[in-house]
Length: 128
Image (cartoon, rainbow, N blue to C red):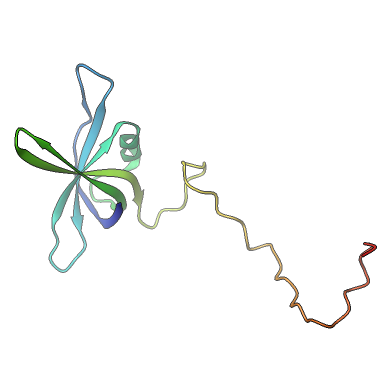
């Protein structure tokens, strides 16, 4: 299940890299924009951490994330894994960053209304 949270980036941590594997992550803290603001720490894993390269402290962002839980030595941990971080009010990126393409609807004229019982327009050359 995925969630979304909006707020201001309070702190960006340096990228952490594993010494034994190819794993790396970058953590950041978001201050929510609610009546009673709270600071929430997120992790951006591997290639998702590259989204934070154009984000700086003080930017207002929207974070889409998943909640992950695990048990280790009879203790339970919860991680908030950010999979999309977008600046609020920013225009869409120039390339397709893995998102779905939006159709251009501004140049498409509306379809004519269908009226049963009326003959079709005679300006087409189709035989049926």
